[in-house]
Each structure stands twice: as C-alpha cells, then as structure tokens.
Image (cartoon, rainbow, N blue to C red):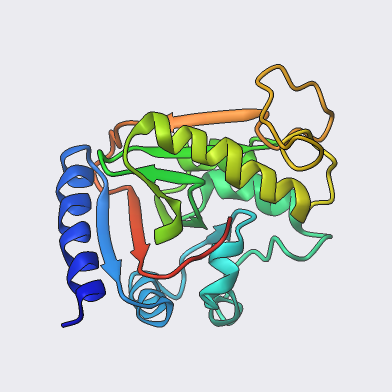
Length: 209
C-alpha cells in the first residue's frame, strides 16, 4: 500500500464513522469505475431513476449505463428537463453530487434554481451523492466557503454567467443580486433523518467543481 493509498484509507474510515453517526450511508472507492459498479449494483431495473445537473455524475460514466433502464428519465434531453426535475420528487433513485462535504459529516449543497437542493432534502427514496476528494473540507464553515468560493465560481464559468465570484476580483458577495446567481439556494445538511437515505459515494479522484 502506498502512502497515498493508506492516507485515503485512514481518511475514509474517519469520514465513514462521522457520516454514519449522522444517519448517512457511506462508501469510499479508489477510482470512479469501482464507484460506478457499486452504485449500479444498488439500482433495480424497474426503479424510477432521475439525476441533477452534476459534472461528477457525468464523469463517472454511469448515465450511459442507465439509459438502458426502462424508467430512466434523461434530464439531459432538453425536452424532458422540466419533467425530469418534477419526477425527481417521486423517484426511487436520485443521482447528483455535493458542492462540499466536511470531515465532521456535513453536506453542503448550493444551487441556482433549487431543484437539486430540494430533491436531495426531500422526495426521492434514495439519493446517491457522487463526491470526489476535491470536495472535502475540514469543517462545516470551510465546506461552505469551498462551495461558494470554488464550486459556485467554477459553475458560473461553466454556465457562462458573469457572476462576481468568477470575474473581476473573483470575490463571493453574499449580497449578490445577479440574475444568474449560482448560490441562490444554500443548504447545509447536518443530519439524514431517514437513515441511509442519502448515500455518500466518496472517490479518491478529483471530480466536478
């Protein structure tokens, strides 16, 4: 075992302990291929499957596999996007990512429209959060800062929105009134009240923003 592998193993054990205490399910993987296989093994062929806008979900390649499932709702199809976002609340499985997690077992979700944050909190029977190691921060406060300063800024660039966090001084303004504000909705999840409903899939790779 390399130093990096042992570090990830030790880190994963801490995270698993802290997230499980708060009601989350947690598994860690050394690569996105193994993570994808695990998530697919937890999804039934007749499950209603939806997903939120997430580069991390796209990067692990699971959407191509799910297109063969009869009740998969493809949000990437522009004609189905609105319908997919509504169906998320009654789906069996919802896939997305987190903008940040903390070592203490907290999840930070920020969103421009709120569909993703809402679905993570309530509705889908099972939520899988695909989280790369770059999303990890030490504390809830640092995770929130990471979500706003890094995730929101990079998503602003991704969606070609000239928000203050992504251009000029690149400083997050809590009073931002930009129409295309990426962090219009901010959710801090400190507890998963339905035990194991939210499942953290932590991967030893950099994924998403």
